[in-house]
Length: 103
Image (tube, rainbow, N blue to C red; front, side, top):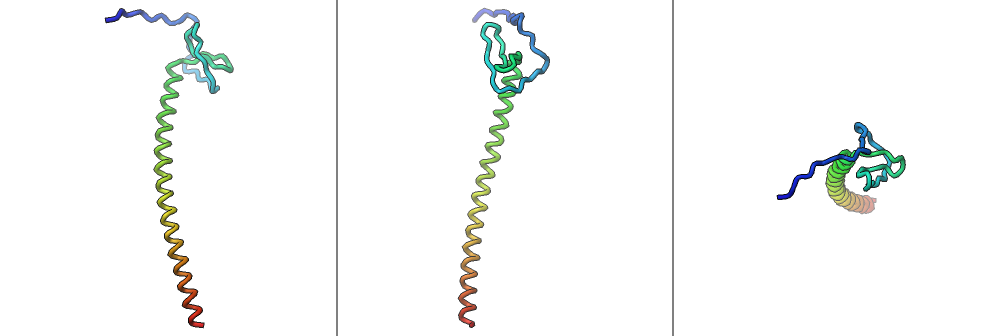
């Protein structure tokens, strides 16, 4: 087996408690071994960052399934409406012919 190496966090890294930067671009500072905001240079907790990504991914999958199911339901509804339209057009055509024959 391999040898266990004790983890010593970088002394410069002092994450703020649950600080969240709302900018969209981050980069990994390899020398300090931290994630930093590209705009405000705020230090971002890596676990919180990846936790947010995981939650967004789960929500995105859920949303995709919901909208796919909704799309299928709408396709089915449109097909029913087209059939109803055709039925009503035929009904009107027959009634118009009936009225013309009575006059």
